[in-house]
Structure formats: C-alpha cells, structure tokens
Image 1: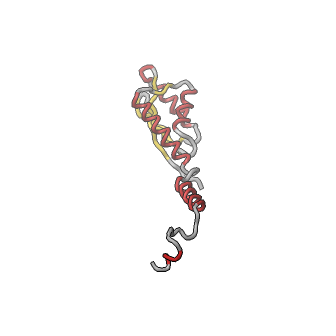
Image 2: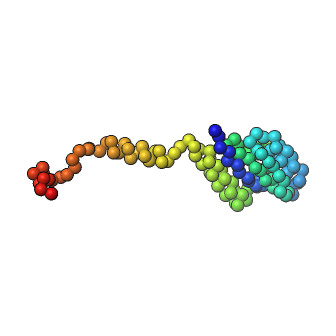
Image 3: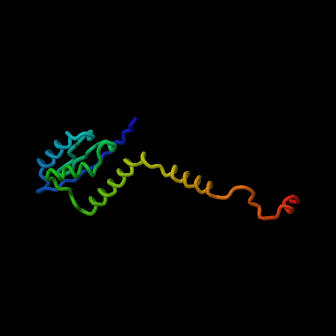
Length: 131
C-alpha cells in the first residue's frame, strides 16, 4: 500500500511583465499532468501547485515547464527554496528504500560476531576462584 505524501509549492514564472496569459497557460498545462492534484493562479507569474510526491516531484514539474518554454525565476531566494525542496522531496522519495537503523544494527551484529567470545578475564584461572 502506497502512502500518499501531498505537497503544496509555489512556482514563480518569469515573463514579460509576468503576463497573465503565460501564467494561465502554464496552469492549464500542469492540470493535465498525472500526480498534480490542483493548480491555482496566485498572481501574475505565481502558481500554487498541489501534488503527490510519490508520483511526481517539484524538479520534474519545473523541468516540464522549462521544456515547454517557460522560464523559472532565478533570484537567490527562489534558487535556495528550489534547492531545499528538491533535497527534501528526494529524501521523501527514498525514505522507504533505505533504513539507517537497519544498517546500523547490521554493523553492530557483524562487529559482535567478529569479536572473540568466551572468558575475557585476564587473570589466571587459580585467581578467579578466590574472587
């Protein structure tokens, strides 16, 4: 059973004075994409997109828009937020595939099996009986 992880992100599009027709055309394009649940126009050049991370990521959505000729805003804030969202969504998508606790437990088990077992008391046998 796949658990849905829903995200809502703002995508900022550049254009000549952020023409409303460009924003509306981008919204219409994204409404037909599988995994995108809802697209709203928040203002000139701003789209609010709700999507399921298990099916599509922000990076794929933005690369799709770029492929169709739309330009993303490249201000420092937008690039930082975009990079952080890419990283977090990548972690969300790979969270079920790799478990840190299992790897750590396996390392401890292997270390335990490699150690010599038995009596580890460094005293001679005749001294152990008196203590």
